[in-house]
Amino acid sequence: MNPKSQKEETNNKNGIYDAGIEKGASRLTPEKIRKVFDALVEAEGGARLKAYTNACVHCGLCSDACHHFLSKDRDPRLSPAGKVKQTVSRILNKKAKLDVDFVKQACETVFTECNLCRRCVIYCPFGIDVAYLMLFVRRGCHQLGVVPQYIQDTAHSHASTFNQMWVRDDEWIDTLQWQEEEARDEIPDLRIPIDKKGSDIFYSLIGPEPKFRAQLIYQMAVIFHMAGADWTVPSAPGWDNSDMCMFTGDMEMTARLKKIHFEAAMDLKAKRIVMGECGHAFRSVYDVGNRTLGWKMPPLPMVHAIEFYAEILREKRIEIPKKFDRPVAFHDPCNIVRGRGLGDEARYVINETCSTFIELTPNREHNFCCGAGGGVINCGPPFKNKRVESNRVKADQLAAARDKGAEVLIAPCHNCHGGLEDIIHHYELGLELKFLGDIIYECMKKE
Ligand code: SF4
Ligand code: SF4
Ligand code: SF4
Image (cartoon, rainbow, N blue to C red; front, side, top):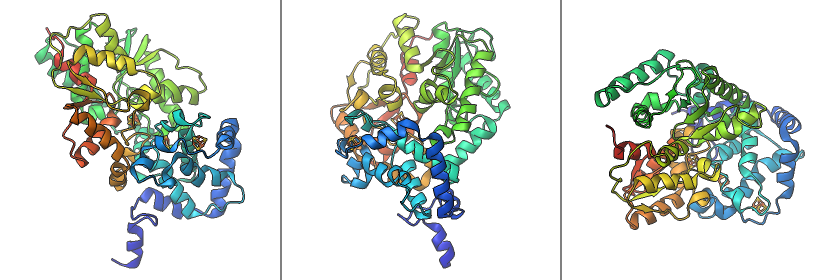
């Protein structure tokens, strides 16, 4: 290997090579970096940025909230306030030198050393939202064209096709029809209604489902059918509710994605959106997407699958003749429980469907992130080992539940599944992962 290619093989800092960071940074100059960040602070900084950065008294109470800090021997560089100091504080200090190495380091910090999980927010006496500050820096990285390659590829796919997996329109319809055919072997009158106007429910899900986990579409169709739900899915783009652009800082694209999602539901005159089991997609619809579009609230009611499951169980629209009989633990996804308070609804569903429930400690809004969220898993293979090692505390938490007897870990979020699978495998925890829909489908009466 000649010296030049050897240099290209690794990022300077820690031996990880990421083409999106290296090639993007190679086009920058200190002048351009300063200009872009100064313009961003001027245009989008606002009162929130100033309030958060001025309010921090460096008390360090947020440190023990962060799984990166705890998992890496309390490295102060990985504390939430430490991450702010290395990134936002330098950007706001007009005298600080912002060179190419700063951008590469800041990019790696905000994209791979923070999951935007907001656990630190609830431990800060001033409620400083470090996740917001990290996202602010990601926005600057996006404007500089320095973004880890894998997540940028997903964002490009979404920008081009309106779904993150580059599923073609005809493949989407084929998958729905294929799943309907499969389900009709089990339930002959089951339909997957496409473009049905005026339905009670517009069902949306994330791109990887038709691509890799089509059985989840099958299962949800069976649950809808048995619950007697009036539902539909669109044939046109708008069905993928996921949103990596929210995490790359491409808010213009996020606005387009959420607009097409909401408009697909409104064009079909649906009464509400029911979303599949995903956390970040849910956050993008209940919180970020609507505000990015300038709307205080989403333009029509929307619920996460957990809320729909709780509703049909409460209303006795499905029957559970025999509960799931292996001991289960439950991972509270941050975007669903810390962000939206659905911990009770999730526990209601679990207690209605499972015979033995073992709580993780900590749990609910105090639960540790899976380490995948905030787009960290989407930064891809270059950062996989680092991600898993940065969440040893999650492995310890899961091991404690396993030692109490848990065999199955339920996580109602696709990203959580990705992160937890890697942790279970790496730390040899021997837990089986399931969605809530898996449990309901397995236990419900289907005739
Ligand atoms: S948002 Fe989560 S990952 Fe990021 S600094 Fe806070 S606790 Fe750590
Ligand atoms: S807890 Fe809040 S005030 Fe204290 S260091 Fe962390 S961000 Fe700053
Ligand atoms: S993947 Fe799950 S636990 Fe991790 S940030 Fe997203 S919702 Fe939270």
